[in-house]
Amino acid sequence: MAASSRAAACLLACFQPSVMVKLDASCPAASLVDFNASAAEHWAEDFLGEHTSSDVMKIISAAAVGAAGLLLLFFGERLVKPSFFVSSLVSGFFASFLLVYGIVEHVPIPATGSCVIACVVPLVVGLLAGCLALKILKLAFLCLGLAGGGALGNLCYIAIFSNFDTGTFIAGHDLIFWLSIIIFAVLGACLMCWLREDLLIAITAFIGAFMVLPSLAILILSRINNKFLWVLDPSKGKSNFSSPFVYPQVIAAACYFAIGVWFQYRSHKQVKERRLKNRQMEQPLALVAP
Image 1 (cartoon, rainbow, N blue to C red):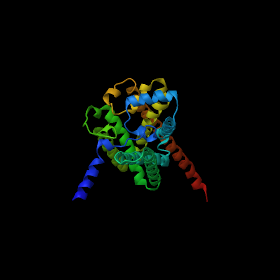
Image 2: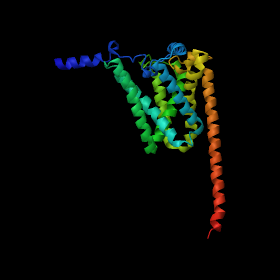
Image 3: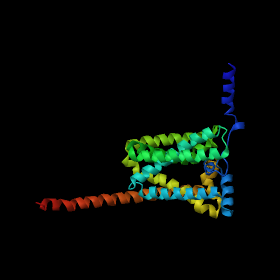
Image 4: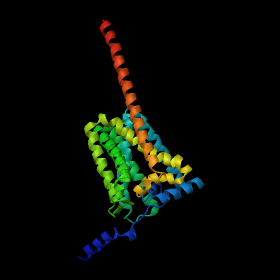
């Protein structure tokens, strides 16, 4: 009986705020949690002054996200395998990161160890998900739908659902934030598995547009004014969305999406016309051949 009581006490203690372990600010993974407008501005001021190893990682990550976003935005339908790999990697990375962070946050692990776990495990899981997606077509469409739906859920939270809050916070964000992302991600996955090729252009362009958005904010706009980084902070919701530093970026992302869809449909139509023309040219040759 005494042993079971001690076990229960230990279990409860793991969920007490007093033993919660936060990722060190120098850890690259720390930028994925508890991110807010003031933290973004503080980071921008530091970055424009002296670079640290954490800053360099953020810049490299932002550049990689932006490059992948441009590929998805303009060539998502043509670069099917890279699109599947990127979307599956992103879905696997963030899903596993939330799980790993939830564990690390409540287990007394040294700062270095928790940083390594929070950085390496999600990356490995993301890479495995990306590789599996190239082998399993259904998983590829599923992850693409999850990524697109999650991005839409994030936008809907900033624009609409941030007006509601439960007071329950997970990894620095209200429960409504996570519910909006999860529900839209599941809907996106279901639609993508059902419609597949019909949605491929639209969803790759959408994911691409909202990957370019944070990349531009970090790499370019933050040098003009660090308040442009507010677009990365969904915790402030409506107050940030109404800011002239935020909503023009969201409108611009919608324009990127429209341009990407137009460009991809135009390219798709040209490829179909070219193939049809080649078939028509091959038919007379087949009739002439002995």
